[in-house]
Structures are given as C-alpha cells and as structure tokens.
Image 1: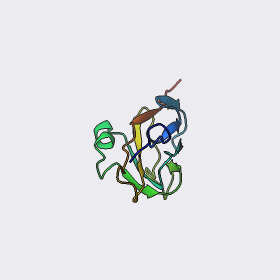
Image 2 (image 1 turned 120 degrees about the vertical axis):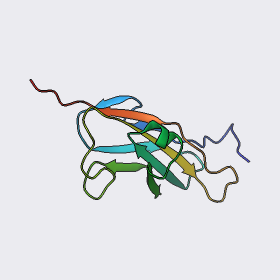
Image 3 (image 1 turned 180 degrees about the horizontal axis):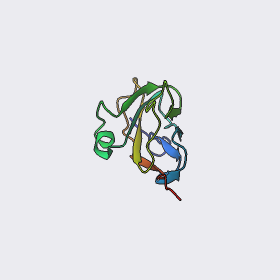
Length: 118
C-alpha cells in the first residue's frame, strides 16, 4: 500500500510552469517523477477534455525519461505548435509492480503567444 507519509506518487514541478506563456513554437516539457514511478504515460493536446480523459488522441506514449519534446519533425506536433493556442498536458505515473498504479496526474497547461503584425 501507499505510505502517504513517505511517498508522493504524482508527477510534480512541471516545466514550463502551469499556465505559462511561450514565444517558441516548440517545447521541452519536463517534470519531477513521482516517488514510486518506473515510467510515465504522457498526454499532450490542445483539447483539455482529451487530456483529462486520457484519450488515445492525446497519448504521446509511455517513457522512462522525465521530459518530452514537441514541435519538431519526428516528435509530437511535427509541424510546430500553433501561435495563439493553449495546450494541455498530463503525466500519469506508472509502476507495474505497485497495486495502486497508475497514478493520474493533474492537467497542466501552457499557451503559445499569438503572432501579431505591427
């Protein structure tokens, strides 16, 4: 069982910070792993409900590292992130040997600054 006094199972400390505004159309998401995690299911989309509900369209894969690049060829959103758009992401912590796994993480967001003509 989970010892809540000793173990914090959720992903935490998202980079960029929740709600951050970014200028670039690519991103390197990162987080602090939960204490019991051996891998991470990552969800990323411009649709809040898809991320919240863990839909297949938002699922970016299971990985052992605590970062995800998006917005480049060969990565999620290969054509870049869209200016003026809010993106949502979540990390579920996985430990196949723990009976309480997976631990569903909170939904975080960031947005890409709109392009403005001057």
